[in-house]
Image (cartoon, rainbow, N blue to C red; front, side):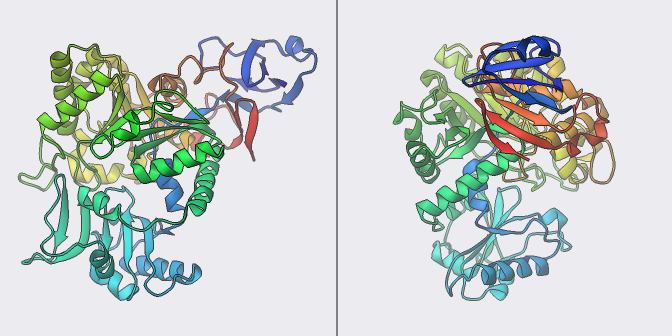
Length: 527
């Protein structure tokens, strides 16, 4: 099928100017040129943009689509502003879903930074709210959460359970009794045993999650930490032809490297829209949760700097393995000490393996990476994927945690650009929705919720921000020859916006609407 797009602004992001029209056929862009010429193409369907703006569809450089799918079946706690509101939302969820006595109740999205109590709850609150139910609630960051007594018992957490490496089990003061609070690997590893819905329910939730991304103009998504349960879902969906979006997954290199090595059909290429992109590891935690690993203490602390998950020897071994296997690796680093560990260990891994740096390693989040570290990242061929929306969602919290100087360098996109480091932007869904226009707005304005401009010198232009979620994001996936720009031979992956982000007031960018999302010529979403 042939389609000609015309009648509005066309942003190619390919450095080719602004053509009047695009001709695409069978999911591939064939020609760019004048509307008068291309609209005469025999047999072409004409798509009049009616003044709207067409550009390459957005590419998600880092999120967790399977986790997003899972949250669609959970109690939404994102609006809770007190312990009592958490309880009310959990009770309402249990009643609406008619959860039977003893059934699991899972909530997601509370943020202790925004609660009136200013801290995490403990198991006592959950026991009182829903006696007789095992209850788990996850912090918005996904790095920590709270379990009820019934949930702790069901998962075998007792006073004798030791803290796992890279995590912490909260205890009541003066005892070893678990308080219900779990942090980092303690939370992720222990809650991995919570029972999952049946496969058909998970298929439906995955399709609903795809709809969330499509409404945001995204056609390529990521599963940013894939373990056996997530792989089972994604592979089954691919085999049944139920994936609509190109999905790139990254197995946990510590827990299940066999997902990459044992599935050559998916390694580095799509089969029914599923691809294994490489590996993922975590080096530290969350800056707003005060678990990110810093070189200098948090404000108000004498010595506490967060903490690492692995030793240098472990990290070097992971990186050596990725280099030897020629597998890309995504590495979660928030604090500058974690960033330093990645850079230091990658330098060692390159030297000891003698391999070239051609796997395009990605520093995920890179929230507090320093300018001197960016210079070294450039030499190593590293990509920085910034969670720049932190400036809006937690910018004021970062000022409290790190002070003005360090907080102003959160997600330093301009510094990365000046250092020559390729960078992308992500929303880390389900931490926040995958709204790429909101991310562009954050990168251009760097505004906090209290109205401050956090690090004005790190603001970038609209054009530069758009490239970070299209052209450079495609480069991150080794797909720059097929995606991320509109030129001859590229896939017909397009998004239609209500306005041209280049022309609107920068403060208005996040209010631009996605009108249609087109994947390889097929409109998968239309407002």
